[in-house]
Image 1 (tube, rainbow, N blue to C red):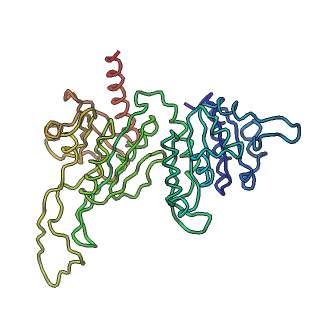
Image 2 (cartoon, rainbow, N blue to C red; image 1 turned 45 degrees about the vertical axis):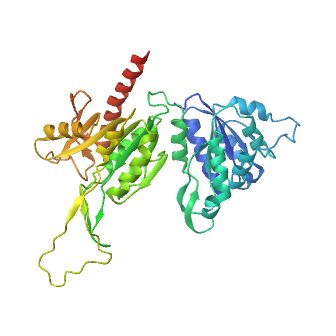
Image 3 (cartoon, rainbow, N blue to C red; image 1 turned 30 degrees about the horizontal axis):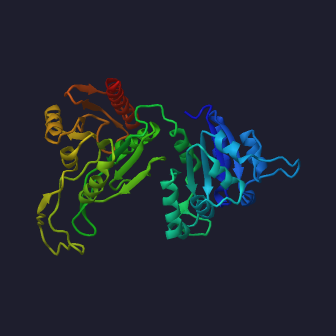
Amino acid sequence: MIKNKKILLGITGSIAAYKAAILVRMLVKSGAEVRVVMTPDAKNFVTPLTLSTLSKNPVLVDYFNPENGSWNNHVELGTWADLMVIAPCTAQTIHKMAHGVCDNLLTAVYLSARCPVLVAPAMDHEMYHHVVTQTNIKLLKKNGCGIISPGYGSLASGIEGDGRMAEPEEIFLKIDTFFPTTPFSGKKILITAGPTFEPIDPVRYIGNHSSGKMGYALAEEAVKRGMEVYLVSGPVALNPPAGVDHFTKVQTAVEMYDACMEIFPKVDIAVFAAAVADFKPKTTYSEKFKKDGQEFLSIELEKNPDILAACGAIKNHQWVIGFALETENEEYHALQKKKNKNADWIVLNSLKIPGSGFGTDTNQIVIFDENDRAHPFSLKSKRELAFDIFELLQNKFTDKQENKK
């Protein structure tokens, strides 16, 4: 997707500027034509010589080249690119961009740009969360800029927090998927993943063995196909895939329900891959429950909200896909679930098949489509199955678009 694209990379004065060299190398290696514009302060962190060597183009810093008096035409640069990416982008440059301050070549190029712009903020935790910075970021979004959210980690100040620039691999993936060629271009998707934990007391809970690997593989594949991804995850030992736009971490079924009900009206597709607990303790103890010589303990349970059914009941244009993990009469129960919860597709997997189900890297599934037709897939990695699911879904969307013509 990146091959032959013209990428204009802006670099500002942040310690994260060294990562820009890695990004340039990745872009050039993928066949992009890269030109670099730096602020004067950025030269304190990475040299123009390094970046010009990697990009195979001169690096521009000032309006004029003092050696020969030539002018760096910011208008020409702004109209040359297919995409402008500013990474890292400091709080100061974000402020200038948001308010039209044009006091260096980079901001002048930004104001002249006729292409889409992606911004990767990089700053200290408190600076990032300051109301002024967040207001400026909202202004950039309103003006059409895409924001590549910073991550959480060690910062130059010595603390840990938000504000760490997204890694070059994530920024590269955002750029790569910015030029999608699939029917999913511009589509938004909600994916749920992992288990839910229903607390008995502060120590104990009711849960299941879901690892979240299937849902996370689906999110990763959705990113690759250029979708805007909303991932709602229960407690798992996984990091969100690079490129996920909106990540919500929850513990309980009620928390997952609330998150999904807020997100669902915004999306075009919803895939409910999470293993949500059907029941929760009716009473949750505020302190650790002591056995105190008791031989038996009874816990009264009550139903959790049914997320798939709730979304199926209110769907309008959305395409809804549910997952069914069964142990007996599998096809019958899967099709009943599809019907009762008004899902368009149901994905059946079984605990009886070795290598399938909870906690594994592999799975074996059968997809029942809107006509109840079965599409079986052999045992393979969950990433491969995520690809298969989206291939089948992409064919569906391609057919829908063809029928509209």
